[in-house]
View: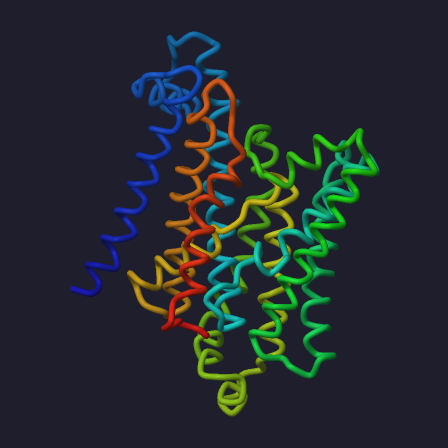
Length: 339
């Protein structure tokens, strides 16, 4: 029965994602029939020899909507699994890359790249975003070590403080550099509007590379939930495991931010939903967070581009509307899973 359930649930989630992709592709400023969406897919994958649709419909679907849809799925997967990882490592229910400041750190690097004009260079935003994201992570851990309090609450509060500091620095950069103000503000709100297939080609390999160590160390992270001292007695190199997974997660967050900007609360909401439904085993949480994160982000982006037609809302505002009340709920809840 358990094996059957293990097979049915992922299959159901995959079918849900496929259905969501088709629906998202069909709606927008220009409504496109679902059968036309299937025609374009079959035509582009070589299954169908000819496509009798108008060229503008094919262009709209293949060059505008499908890259955006695929990117939203990839970003949702990335943010959700990183949120689950951060909550596991810090053993705190309100940790995620956005709240901890990693996303803001990457955004600072992107803002600096915009000001210096590096956004026109290949990986000109990705590399600075990566460096500042890793620097933010190093500062969080370093400050906690200096204070000689390495508990999860200290790390969390340090991250929140750095998040505010970095946000203030970005605001100052916006004020001082009026010419790049629009680009930087756009980045801090998050959007998939300018996504291309090239962006997917950059992000997808990063996801595949960074997810491997995250899943590889899931067993060690399960043991570390019992406490650092207990894990060490069982032969786990806790500091090495923690730094390895955090570095790879920060690389993934930096890649996401460099392409679509800062999108918060996905990593906060999704892991809790997954733990409630499937338990707290990290391998299971990481796996299902990929599915649920992808679905949630696709729905959020579809709402962002359809609620205010012909205008478009920042997708970060949609996720914040859903995530902020949930964050408050976690703060007020008496019985917390990790605190």
